[in-house]
Length: 205
Image (cartoon, rainbow, N blue to C red):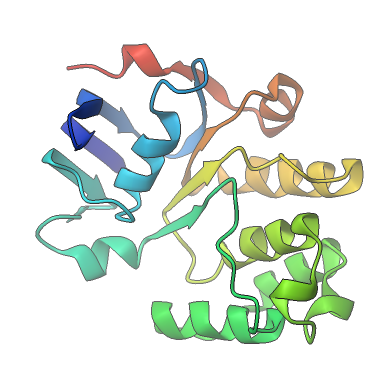
């Protein structure tokens, strides 16, 4: 479901990714490695947020370079630090993601919103939400469009214990049908998800 080969990325003269390769079937995977090694950059490149300088990325059979719309339609990406949409309400953000994916907001996402306790925040502007609430909203939005690949950067950061438990249970269930590929320093969270550890430095051809 998730394949990438010889992926490279530089910013100016600084090379962050060079020849990174991986192939992952459905399941949960916890990307490990020290800070600054390139884990967040890899996730951004796999999600198509930053364009790779070289290599190939395939999402559920669709090349991100040759078929970007189809590939992005089969993935979800939640960064560690949420993008700021200060004047958009929670409800409008979910509606926008559904529009971008060309689908309605499914009942499953409504249920996730309820489990995260987001109901009362849906008509609040994102700029007025706490960072934890914003993150829960972005994570709930990740399930819109029934993604085959979920790319999550430190998903448990900033969440209270109840929200962490909810998210771990959701991802543990998702691993049966999707690739959950996440960077995390939270071993207890990764264990709760049932994730297989993947060392960043092993992602080579």
